[in-house]
Image (tube, rainbow, N blue to C red; front, side):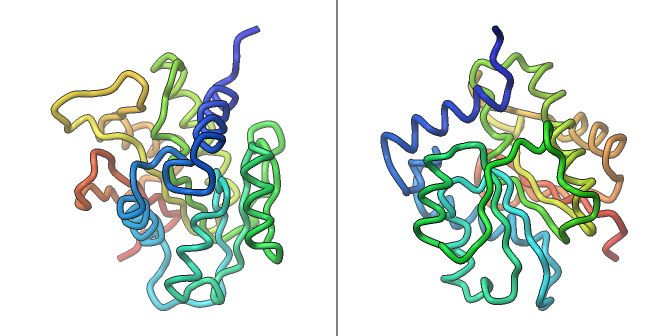
Length: 213
């Protein structure tokens, strides 16, 4: 039986976690500096200075974003919810942050309620492709993003690998700007911001329900 995209990706990340534990390499990021940079860019989708908002961390892994929110003093202002498919990673997240909401859920099979959270981020959920054929990965990306956007009252952020690189890796998901914007605008919203200014071989996308300016 053919493995579904989510299963392929989860197996890869669980192997990383088994080898490296609750570290950046344990979620297949090369170092802590790059991961912290990604977290800051992801959180840029949130309105500056706003307090008391709800945030979904889809693909939360062992809860490393919570560590970052706590270090930067923002955790107290955010109603955090983490979702992942990996029981070992969720167990680690619950151990480190026992007072927070972490749940195992496949949002394609068990969709979140419509407009149930303010914002959602998907950090690293769509950067890997592994053995998934590219057309199938694109379909999976749009289906997943559509489900998450339905649950978000205000907006979402996600990252993918850029095609503006010297060379592409077959195991990563490189998605061109034009193709991505066309797909996202048709399926989600045309209020899109692309962040490709932070020095990594990826880019981050903010998708909002309403114009921001």
